[in-house]
Every structure is written in structure tokens, then in C-alpha cells.
Length: 314
Ligand code: ASP
Image 1 (tube, rainbow, N blue to C red):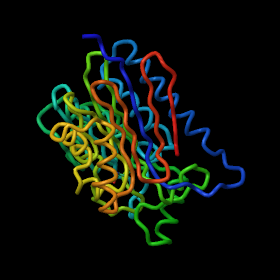
Image 2: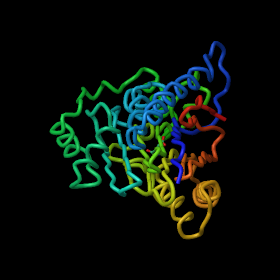
Image 3: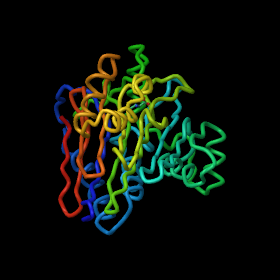
Image 4: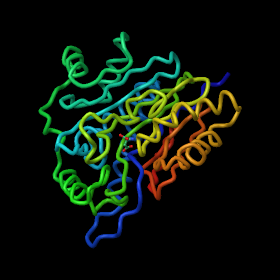
């Protein structure tokens, strides 16, 4: 059998379209950031890197990019703090790792991977998760490391309007008051293995202690070489209720749907009727890619080894 052509897919959250603002830098910085991140992951895959390595590289860079709500630039809780969540899954072995409610770990995606590699548990939360990360030698930061002025203004706007999940940055192409800012990556490597990684600051003005879909295996993240690797973004509570990421794989395994049909059906038939907003990215073992969403846009892109990246917002 010939080796599959590796592919990496990323997202940087979904949402509605912002009203154009005079002097706005518009879409260009988002396309540029996504393309740079995809290019870094493509180099890894082209050089024979694994799907796990490629998603880790992509999410590392997405977390450090303040345009996206994960790691540095994460949104605020109602208490003016940050609580970060992430999860990772290896499609070859079905090993998985996840962290929730981190306040001091610089790179939650790496924390999730450390939980998976250590192997005793799948999901660690709050103080115990941070203790684990410290013991693993992961970089720790002061909690205000994640704060940016733009996100603080979003919290103030959300609190003024009594909203959860709403924030405000009129320079962004997607309306930050209606945007879900998780980041994620899924990949297929040359050995035919899949992996998925999702990382988030959650939703602006969320209650402290609230955990969304992103760190939950089966809800925000899933990967199985026999079907697909999936990373979600959107109204986390609905993605949890729909077991959204797993549902894509289940439809492929049990109903024989192809990737595109399964991914579209989850968004259209499972999430939308429950009021879920957002989307997902997915790749299967043949390298097919699906990126459905039910919002006006989703920051997204993909790259095949040897090609230039493709990025899109609307
Ligand atoms: N799904 C994330 C959560 O509910 C939010 C997002 O996708 O931006 O925490």
C-alpha cells in the first residue's frame, strides 16, 4: 500500500461576522497567522513527523498567538481570571490526555500531552493538574500572563450586557461578541496515523469552575485511526450533550457514512437542533478533510505535505 499523503487541519474558533470598522486591519492578520502555523506543521509532517507531533506544533503556535482565545490572549471568567482547558488524542492507540481549569500553565496543549504520555489518568483538573504539570517540568507563569487588554474589554462589554461568552474586539473579522475562540488541530501522518488536539480559554464571562467540551474526550476532541480525528469549537455545553467529536467517528463506524457526510450531519442534525453554534475540523485516514460550521465563519485552514496552506474565514 502506498503511504498516505500527510495533512494538517487547524481552526481558531467560529463565530459571526463583525461589522466593518474604519481602520480595521481586517482579515489579513488571521490568514497570515493561520498560514504560518500550517506551514510549520507541514514541515514537520513532510520530514516524517507524526500526527501527534504536528498537532502539538500547531496548537503551541495557536496558543501563543493573541488573535486566538487559548493560552496567551485567553478570555476572562466572570471573576476576571483565566481558566484554560485542553485535550489530545492519539488515533493509533486511543490514548488520550486532558487538563481543565489551569491558571498557571503556559501551554495547556503540552499539559494535555503530558497527561497522556504519563499514562495513569486521562483528565486532570485545577490544582492537582497544575501540581502534575509543575512536576513534569512544564513552564509555569503568573495567572495574569494570559491577560490582554482586548480580552479585558471583551469581559467588560460582556458584563455590561449580562452575557456569557460574549466579548468585544471590533478589529476582528468575526464579531468577538459572538465568537468561540478555541483552537484546534487534527492531522494524518505518513504512517496513516491520526491525532487531534484542542485548547481553549473557554467562554468570556463564564462562571469560575465551568468546564466546556474542549477538555472532554468525545465531546471536543476525538481521534481513531479507523475513522477520523476531530477537534470542535463552539457552545461547549451543547457539544458535550451531543458527544460531538465522537459522533463524527460513530457515524462513520456504525452508519458507514464518509467523513464529509458524518461531519456535516453532526453540525446540522445533532448540534443545530439543540441550539449549538460553532463547527469542527476533521481528517480521515485517507486524508479527506471536513470543516463544517453553522456560524457565519470559522477561522480554519489545511495543508497537505508538499503544498502551500489554504486558509479561510467565511
Ligand atoms: N468550546 C469552547 C468552550 O465551550 C469554546 C470555544 O470553542 O471557543 O469552552
